[in-house]
Image (cartoon, rainbow, N blue to C red; front, side):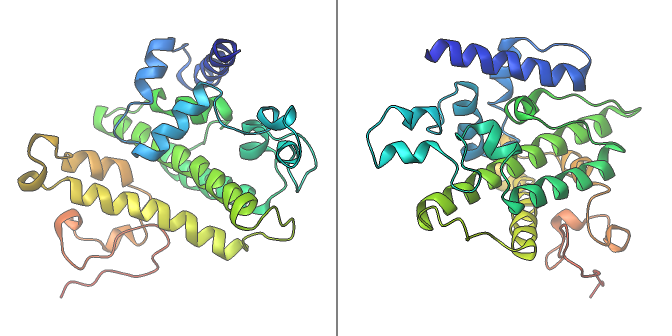
Length: 250
């Protein structure tokens, strides 16, 4: 059963990535893609489990005795849970808000956001986008895999928060503002991490290239036109999405 689940998820991922890349990635490329250091470690673990069909949801609980058997169903929608349902079908408004934020952001970067589905989440590490400049194309792909993977993982975390901390309270949900703030915080943390990783003194050969960071976030930052060219290494320079603050040189 485990092998069948893995094979099914690989096939799903190949189908989703074929729509974006216009060619089908191999299974090896997909497995290599989830090792990509651009994606944070806990999110990579989330993707790895997803590709193996190993998340403990839905059918995993169906043949168990009560009270575990009840965990098979989504308490909001009263249907059997699956990763497809959790990430793309559940009526939780937080889920819809997060994908809307992600898609609106990616439209700024890519002109048009490709369809994001479950296979896209598992395989976003091998998505490819074209641009006249090689570095700009790489920046588009990097922004895509960060935003898609972090958005999906945030939806998963909110689902777990509702089911565990709030004990399946169907009336518990995050407001639109709370959800937006959480999503922005996640993305802005990634921007901050990117800035820190460009420090060659600290990270030596593992340091992230300045141009890589610039091309990843170009076109997405708040008040970008007012930022100094060296914003990556400028102390006190608030950079991010939804920061609503113009940088003024001191």
